[in-house]
Image (cartoon, rainbow, N blue to C red; front, side, top):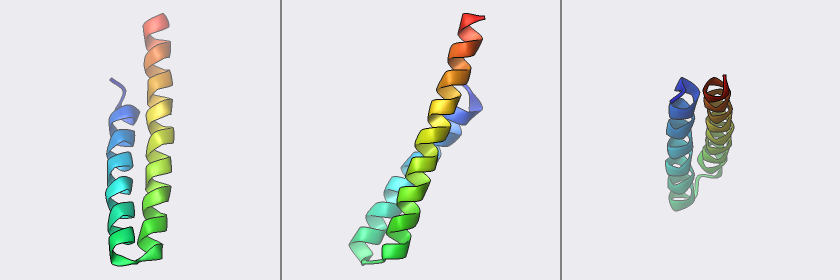
Length: 58
């Protein structure tokens, strides 16, 4: 598994937690940061998946 996939998954989880806390506390800034972290994590995870696919096909 590519490093980007594991790091992306962790960012995604961190973003979900941050977003949830922001909603619970009424902190819109924290909620927005969580959404950004979640999106970054999804993108990084996808890039890692592409790298894995390229390694397997060669």
